[in-house]
Image (tube, rainbow, N blue to C red; front, side):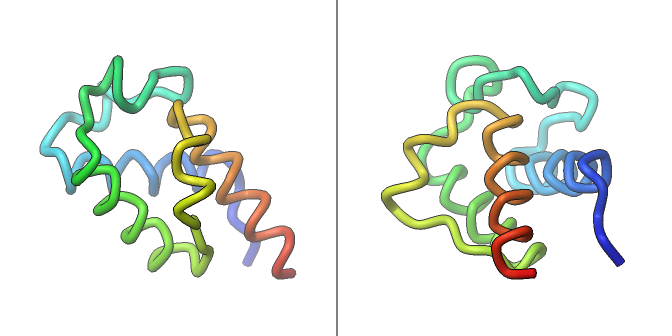
Length: 85
């Protein structure tokens, strides 16, 4: 089954909520992960690992700094999933 963008967003929101304890309602695609959501680098690594496990994709050390917003993370997941299919 192919996951829709909304499915991916829901899963990413749940992962962010689990790692940080913030409410899923506070997570929106346009929000900056560091500036708006105040997620530190250690929590971002945890989120990255959880995303890799959940979606069977890879986020390399070189790609991580390019992921600034929640939408960037969703875009990365979609692209990585499309590349493996």
